[in-house]
Length: 144
Image: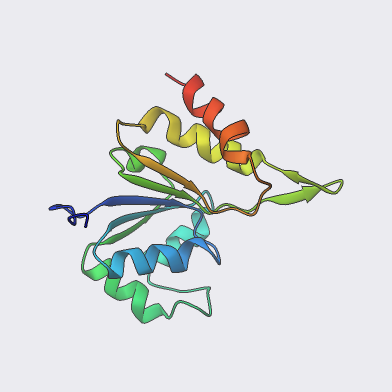
């Protein structure tokens, strides 16, 4: 059996939409220190005011996570520093019938300078098998 960490995990979730927001709030509910990152400044302002755009996440849950200091929505990449776990929950659009991985690539480039030994990165975006190894891993390794 694995012992629980003595300190709360610092978890960053890139993308605060219909996948990322419920995940962020649930992680905060179980004690993770969560940074909810999104590039949409209006969405982040609404989240900072405990306004929900998700039918799966009542505003009261956001307000509680904000009040107990376990959820911090932001647009600032520097707020991602020091993470233990990162989850990419960004949209993957189709372009000419193929996945457009630019949002995954952008998220990876945002995380890359903030990597530290032992951190975990999870791709939760809808994409094809191999995206993590073939696209994300080389991006993360290329940035010093």
